[in-house]
Image (cartoon, rainbow, N blue to C red; front, side, top):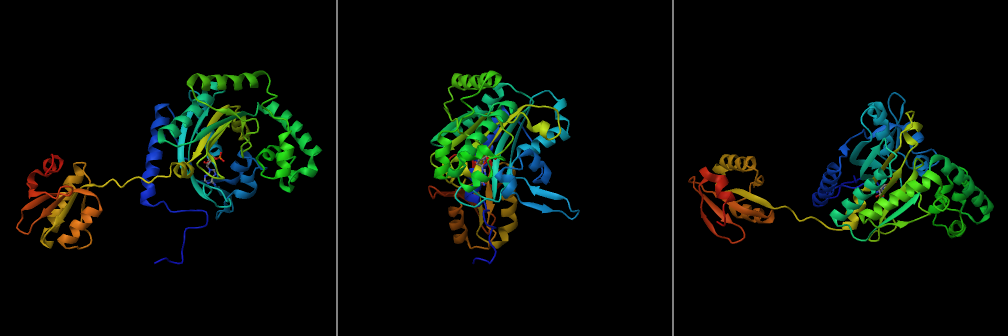
Length: 414
Ligand code: AMP
């Protein structure tokens, strides 16, 4: 019965079986983040395009190729949000959150949009859970953020997770390093892929991410920023590592780690999962000490991460079993319809799950349907006003007192 309409390329429907695991993931995240004092925030699904151009960076793939940008009727350029950090920083400034006690600790969950080539684990509409700690440069905030994502993946039971850790240095040392890297790339221009060559001066860090063999050869001998970290940058990185060590959070230092967004400074990290194929990153983030200033606010250090819900689900590869029903109220005679509905409502108000037949089935059909739904008990309303309670597991049936329905339903075996 397929219609000619399908979900757009790179998007998907969340069907009830998947929605249950999704709800478990979101519930676990909400609980873990709330216990650490990260308060939920929600920003609009679209923003002024310029926010992302300035925030994410004009040289990034996201801004160059992947944004869903459109004009509204007032000819303003708007973009479906490709990430959550720039909008949250916008909200932080717009609502004067810099006047609150710092840091402001926020969490979010919702859909994001990138016009990428769809494949397993990579979609055009996907969902992220994320957090931001804005207004602190303490390595404690970096370590706390990392540990919270580690806790979440651990609690959910995501298998085969590895934490990769790197540092990009402060804005100044990062700028000096980028010059050094550009010089290295220019010296080997002939061996680089066209894409990397064309972007040496705009985004040299992306060369570390290239799959091209020639480029990989050049990058094997490229200078890394981790090796050259000095002063406060080196101290910050050492402190983050010491905090993770003390907490028993294991990680590997990856001097070639880069991220696809321009705003990162100092700590960056990535959680990868070997159960996932090419799109192996489950979540990642880092410090972005320059972003708020870049958006016109006061200099405000911050750190955060985002994790992809679909990637978590792929890594878990499980479907939650349907919850079943506490009760099904069946009728032996159509005259009992009103009573069935009233009794089902009474059960629901008492906190039990209860269904009635909405499809006009005969009694046999209703019992079959109740079984299919996983109903533990069926209340059968007879034409003479009496009622029977049937335990679906044992098949035992006995007379029931509908005046005392909730007790009947929550009692022991029938
Ligand atoms: P990013 O915002 O690029 O740092 O990505 C953070 C996380 O979001 C990644 O680790 C993925 O889990 C997820 N993610 C990013 N892009 C996509 C996509 N196109 N489809 C599905 N998940 C994505």
